[in-house]
Amino acid sequence: MYKKITRAFTIVELIICIAMIAILASIALPYYHEYRARQEAQNIPIKLSTINRYARSQAAILRQNVVICPSQDSLTCQANQWNKTMLVFIDKNKNRQVDTGETILHIDVVNLKYGNLSWRGALSLPSVTYQAQTGLPIGSNGSFYYCSAQFSSQQRIVLSKMGHIRRESLPSC
Image (cartoon, rainbow, N blue to C red):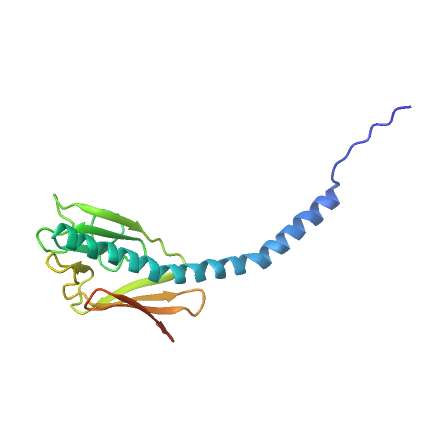
């Protein structure tokens, strides 16, 4: 007599397996979000340093004013949108806005999920401009502030008058 053997999960085994996966996921998910928040907080100063170095070098090489500004649509400058996108462009008419005929050199997508990035400059302007003659910021020294929503990683990223960046930890935002 031939006996057919089937190998499969019973409904009880399947329910136990799904319950174990759900328990493990509920334990791991907060740690994953904390890890991502820490990574974002560590990457922000690096990203800002890189984009500022690029804008500074382009201003010196091209001998034209180069502006870094926040944007939401990757086409125009919009104040207080540093969490989305940063535009680096040649500002021919020195109005700190992307106009027709001005070249966008770089679009840097930031898309912050675990914190907020803001700029507070010396002239209260919502952008950073590097001048054509020297490659130094024109009245744009100030600070970027990164405030984490997940854990206590408040940072001030300072842009000096010479265009250098340094990071400082803050107790609160």
